[in-house]
Image (tube, rainbow, N blue to C red):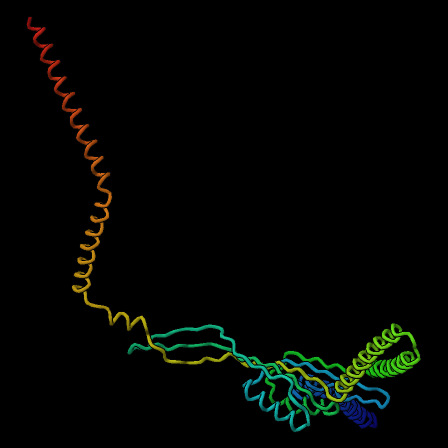
Length: 320
C-alpha cells in the first residue's frame, strides 16, 4: 500500500524537472533571437558618419583631420545651403561649393496646337569643401547626417602632425641662425666680392626661412581646422517644358498642291531655258558635228551611186 504514494511523488518530481528544462531551453533561443534582431537593425546616418578618427585627442599629439563622404540627398541645392548654415554655426567656413546639372536624355511628345512637350531627364551633383574647427568635426558630421538618404562611401583620416610641425619649427630656427651667421660674415668681410656672395647667401637664407614659416603656418591651420570634402547627388528628375512644334508649323504654312505644281512647271521651264542657253555656248562643237554628219552623208551617197553604176554595167555585160 505504501508503494503507490511513493510512485505518485516520484512522477510529480519528474514532471517538474522536465518543465524546468523546457523553460531553460527556451531562454537561450529567446536571447539569440533578440541578439540577431539587434544586429540586423539598420545603422543610422549619424552612426555611419561617426569615427574615433574624428574625436580622438592626445595632449602630446596634434592631428590633421580630413574626411571624405559621398552620399545621396533629396535636393542638392537645399542640402548644400543647410550644410553651409551648419558650418557657420560651428565657426567654420566653406572653401568650395560647386553644383551642376547633367542631362541624361531629352524626349519630345506632340500635344497639339503646334506645341510639343519637352521632357528632360537630368541629375544634379554637388561638391563642397568645408573647414570646421578640428574639435567640432564629429559634431558637424552628425548634424549633416539628417540630409543623407543613402551613404555611398566615407573616409576619415587623422594624421599625426607633431613631427612635421617640429620639423618646420627646427627649419625656421636653423634658417634664422644661418641668416645671423651670414650677416656677421658680410660685416666682417673686407673683400667686396666676398661681401656680395655673403649677401646673396643671406637673401637665400631669408627666402628659405620665409618658406619654412609659411609651411609651419599651413600645418598649424590644418591642425586647427579639419578639411571635409562632400559629394552630393540626388535621384534623376524630369523637367517638363512646352515648346513650339516647328515641324507642324512648317507643314501648315506650306502652300496647296496646285500652287506648288504651277511653281514646279515654271521652275522646269526656266531650267530648260537655262539648259538651252548653256548648250548654245558650245555652238562651234555643234558646227563640227554638223560638218562631220554632212561628210558622212555625202560619202554614203557617193558610195551608193557607185554601187548602182557598177551593178548597171554588170547587167549590160551579161546581156551582151
